[in-house]
Image 1 (tube, rainbow over the protein chains, first blue to last red):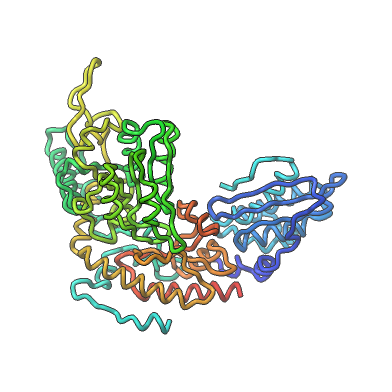
Image 2: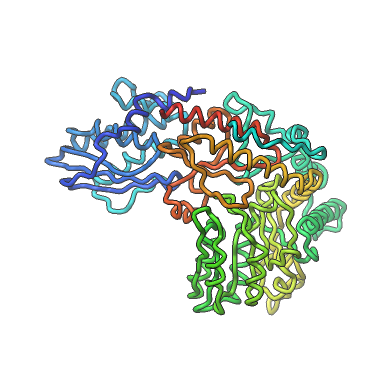
Length: 150
Length: 418
């Protein structure tokens, strides 16, 4: 049985307490809203894309520690990445938090995001960890409707 | 905790919680390596061995369909099924077994009333009156009805303590009101509503009342005749019985006048292609093969509750809720949501800066089961301006030690997030 600290690692708690890029982007040209009805987590992701590159990204909203930290660390990891890279990182992140098999990405390639590997022991919390990412992808794809992880 | 300790324990000779716990096999199952502290009774209750045995006995010794076969097993099954109906009648003090309709649960009971009584009695411009603390199952069936009939759903608001505002009820009850539907006990807040007064006032306006008893029947004595309510719905699984079985009580006069809910076998007395005659009460509302094992299990749950004594259960749980309110109140970071003068079973709370889901996950690691989320009462969450709460809900097998374990777990949660 996984230890509690595998889920609530210091870095996750730190991003929960002091979320990075936690603001509306005035110059954003992409935006989407996400909602997790089970927890009541709500957030909006703002992205400024220039020449296919994520120039800037921010988010606002309220949620649990896992969803807030995931959103915060997502914004840090995606700045400067191309849209295709951003979606590919999400794919790998999704594998990281859901997959128990060998198909799981090597944590070494995940950088700081590897701290979320503990989430896979808590299936009900996967939606918390991925809400910001689904919302980010919807923003890049220009989807208007609220993303609901239910 | 010092404050909580000041409440003296009131031991009751006839109610031994240690013995009661031994009746529930789940408490022998380790949860995350810890012994189980089960505080999610408002969602569902655990089952005593007697209920499990009754269901097992039906499937191993008596399994047959009811009301049909002339053979031995069918007669036995029918007898057990109808004996349970009589147990339910006595349990809620109904005048007749004709008033006891078996349904899947409270939700189906309310939908039955909305779709039969509601559809025949509610028209354009009419109003259905509910309260601001209802579970979604006592909101949505009325919304569906109102939309279909161009009627209006009106809401009696609640105050900051989570109490029903009676003055608003007096104001909202109007010549257009066709039905009042309120919960006896709020699942999200624990508020006990003044249902007797609610019924009395509605009847003074010739308006019938449906009581959602999902959070009441397992915590307090229910007497539908003294209450004089017109409908009362409750669920077996929240009162230590099986899932998938519940009861709708309805006054015979009203049930007689209502059209059937579903058509099928057992609800008819004769069928031709020209005309079908419906069966007498309560079978008119029990189309198809019912949940026979569930009904028998519910009968065993009622026997169990009677043996423990509803009065004892109420007193025991009231002691726990007073103790729990003080013990949780001693945590500075914690705020109790729902502070009504009269409460039953439920301690809903939020902790400053910590999302209920994080609380739930950390407590789970300690073997403590609570519910987190909106508890199917999103309007209540909206009223308090919060996305969710953590909710501990008590049952007859809980102890002061369970509350202390919860408080210890919450201290750990606060520690992790400090």
